[in-house]
Image (tube, rainbow, N blue to C red; front, side, top):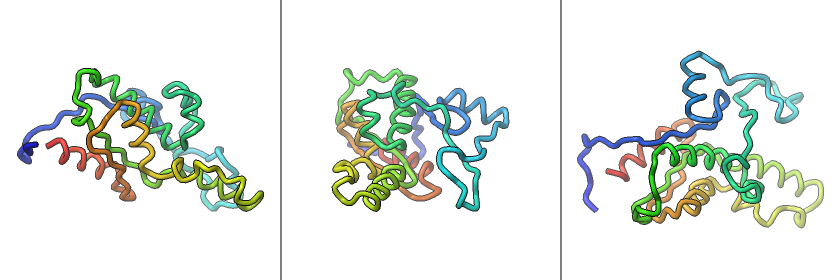
Length: 183
């Protein structure tokens, strides 16, 4: 495979978003340009013992709108977000996977940490009820590369598949790695 020169343009053909200011790319963008804040009092869990009680919380998200409900139950919330955003981007792109070479379709997903919700729930089960109550799917549900793996399976992508985890730089790093791989 030949590499494109560093100045060769690569085009983004579809966008997807699941954010505190919009559950799709259009509402996210409109929220940005109107100055909407996604920061508010956290109500997804009890914050009484926390010093900080505010954050960017995603509200109103229904994973079943993007993925099979059974599949949604099997996956952590971060995978559900990635799936919904990727599905929107793929739809916008107009890409027809049936006509593409699956070995030339890759998946790059950036996630700061992976399945914290799954870790927390299973740690609680372990402490309260013992190891037999911990899900046998604990590790597959929480690992950061589960999002890219689920998407690769969904779309039959057999090319490069990476989960980028690099703290606050994760989003930019994922875009940069995808760009380099395309070139």
